[in-house]
Image (cartoon, rainbow, N blue to C red):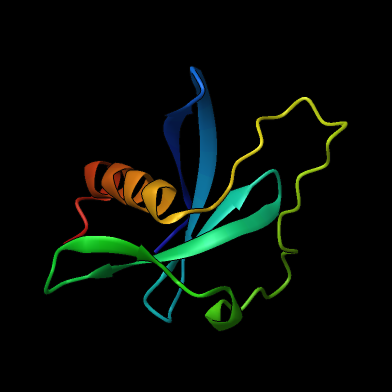
Length: 96
């Protein structure tokens, strides 16, 4: 599966995230060239959850770290954010 972009709204701002499907069955969430986190879909419960950071294989991408001097929105990867991203993936790709 090829990478694709989704948009979510945070603090009244539209944020574009790149979603990178992996062969390991989870999706890396990329924000400004770094890995914000990863999510996976539980087929039985039909819910999206965070993949523990230590289980995410970063590969060539660095982990994302917010820099206070940047004008970009500070995103904190949380279970709520993971579910919001998952809903957008479902809408974009009809993942089941």
